Length: 244
Length: 159
Image 1 (cartoon, rainbow over the protein chains, first blue to last red):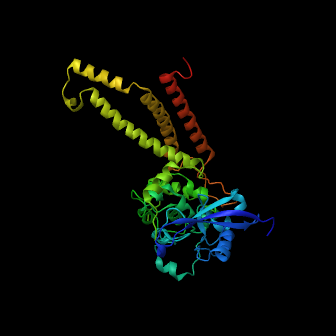
Image 2 (spheres, chains in turn red, brown):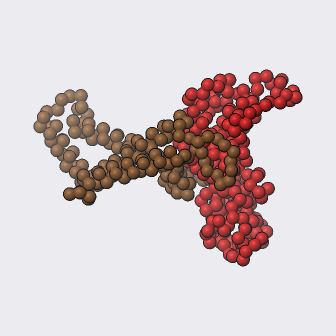
Image 3 (tube, chains in turn purple, orange):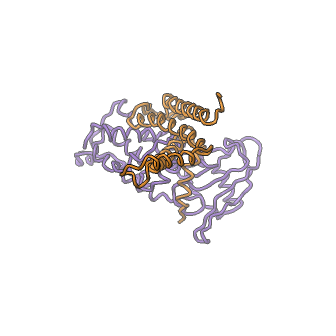
């Protein structure tokens, strides 16, 4: 830890379904240093000021994707956001947009993971016996790897889903995370899902529903660029030569 | 479990594009201009039908009646509010059309960068310089159309 202690006001969204269910904001004064993260500030509140505050976190190093929340109006990982980088004396913390709230800052990911599962996020092979035998290696060239490796960096934190204006208005839209993962497997040279994969997203609530606001790519903490995957997926749907 | 008001959330995502960068502004302007142009066309068709005789559109109105309705409609529409509305509409139409070309091309995979290994600081390949240029050209065209229209109605630039 380095630097002098400074005070910031943490304005925290509070919601407790067992206590009437009316959301409110609580304000806490928290001492921070230059390298204090928003997650550390929230943990200070939980340890010293209000133990009833609910937050979800795990790795503290932007790998698990658990601590996503709206920080000063933008979806960010609390463990990856320094208080000093926000350049604000008051920091407003809310649960992720486009997700139901379980309690305080904890969002419910049931729909989000359901949509992810619907994309069959695993390699599909025509010969399942060959796949399950698992003594065969599937070789790839660097060029084949580069087609999908960027999208394989997804940590399923839900920030892109919270930023997407289409998810906000169409609950049946799979969202940027699920669609980018669909493209990640569709374009993988080892995958033989082909047209079967595209069928899942070919209706009016699927990939054609994206209006390319690009907010998903702006907030992704891993540089996955879901907007790019969605546009490439759309091109495949319109002109793709691969069929299952 | 709480679900925040979906109507409020939807309106916020449309009408408050700040914090997410240029592309979110492009999204909001494209949506708002699309709705505004559609509404204008509906009202325009209604107004035109009124000029030629309303529900009697399938019969030929007398010349005197048609002239009277035409004069009344022109008088009703000749005020600064409608003129200003038409100037704003010119902005929206020019923006929607030229930015629409950008979106049309990207939907077909044109003007996009290539996937690559992410390296910090991240620069999304979905938003290329070519696209940014088209967006700003759209804004320039729309502002030019707005100024031209304002000048026609209010003589604000050239007498």
